[in-house]
Length: 452
Ligand SMILES: O=C(O)C1=C[C@@H](OP(=O)(O)O)[C@@H](O)[C@H](O)C1
Ligand SMILES: C=C(OP(=O)(O)O)C(=O)O
Image (tube, rainbow, N blue to C red):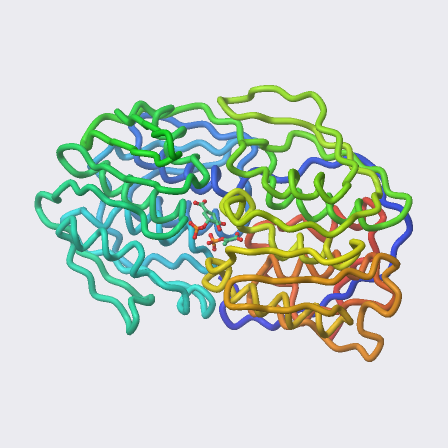
């Protein structure tokens, strides 16, 4: 969608205390899956709170291209699904823009069908590894034609009858787990996914909600065995999507860092597979009050009151990584203002996100006056709690490498730094959090686009 569009630099400056109450757009993971499962189910699915970010909109377009009817009815999105097993062959390549979740899950969803489907993406997505999804699809009998190194563009053609597999997910990845399960939906028999380390469980929970025969067993070591009986019926659902904890992280950390801040963020998804950042920040001394905890649509939801806090460095346990995988860039920014060192380990997956996030973060921190060590799979950040000397007085810009989370993280850094922090491109923020600039400004943050 944004291919080739001009970069939009932006800047953030030291701000006075943030104040107010905000509602964050819907969770991105649940939004993608709502379009996919609603598009596949029989009958009508009604969605409230869908994230209208570019990533999710591209998933909606792909489902439309395969026969789902999608329309807006006031604030709700309404889908008339095709029925499981009844997706239509798309007559053009499916373009997923910047979205790993969109492309990897959809390859699983349609790869087993007895027709050709082609998948493309932007410059960032075209660099990301797809073999992690293509390999299990090959085992199920799908013919794959991919660019060098199993990159996009990819064309898939399913066999008449796909074979169910038993697949042990080799890396902590909800996208891989989900792609195999979605391929299992169109496969006769039982598809089994073994997940040694638990990752976000939205696919399992939502497929059960849509009526799939899916069971989960967890052994004494926490290894999960997920079984799905293929070719069952899925029925349209009513879905209310809570606020995205990964987007929440930006105003939340901003309020912790800017002296005098006191904000409330309402209706945040608190699924335990997503709350690693909040736990870590609390260990660092953050004043985050979790209020009005409740269950909504089968998910834990709460309001968060966040006040400026003096933070101290911690060591983040490696096994927590899956529950905060998208939050390391913003945690690294929080660590810049903590007393002492923050040590983050087990970060190998950060190298294959929208950018190589480990090096993008380390480069940006150094550019803005922070002392840090980047290892193959770890990052150590030594904080400067008063923010003195931080930022880049000479106007050096952080390279965001088409990565929304790098862009938002460094804008938050600027709010508490002595000098401004500038980024080379804010355009990608629209993939996951289109309201970011406006919402932050509304809280009193000094963030703005810079004319080239
Ligand atoms: O399943 C999902 O919705 C997601 C899984 C994670 O990716 P991996 O599976 O690559 O860890 C995460 O980084 C991404 O933002 C969303
Ligand atoms: C990694 C992310 O998304 P995706 O893999 O869907 O591009 C993210 O949103 O931080």
